[in-house]
Length: 158
Ligand SMILES: [Ca+2]
Ligand SMILES: [Ca+2]
Image (cartoon, rainbow, N blue to C red; front, side, top):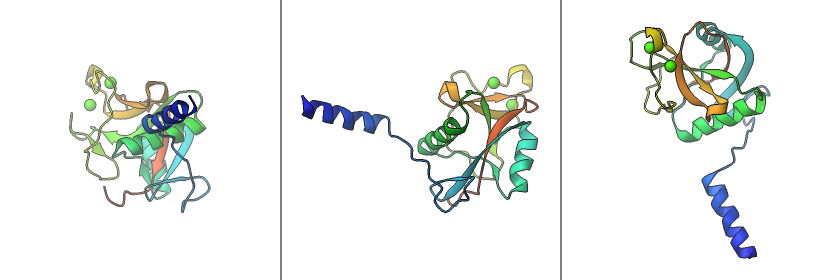
């Protein structure tokens, strides 16, 4: 029985790996993942103002390049945002409809869209947010909406 519980625990930890939030080499207001530093900003802003805020601190809105990084960002948002609100990330198709770009210039080769998204509803949805209550899955939305957001330092190996 004990062995069974032990093996079940191992299985659970393999299926649902816990994400450790550590400051690493980042400042006390940031958390470290894979050599980058990430900061949750609770003040609600439009996508552009959120990006400008990150740029003023030498970063960009967060770009996400793997499921591991997605899970890290989710854990970070969960730590600071218990209200399950929406969070801007650095993805947009403002410049060319349907062509997604990260604001930090890195290439898009990982996506985590919610079911049925991106749908460019009304022909006006060009900025991307994650929603904590939907597993932080992504949706395109009006850029003028105001949400909290995550800034991140530039990717070392995008
Ligand atoms: Ca769009
Ligand atoms: Ca949408």
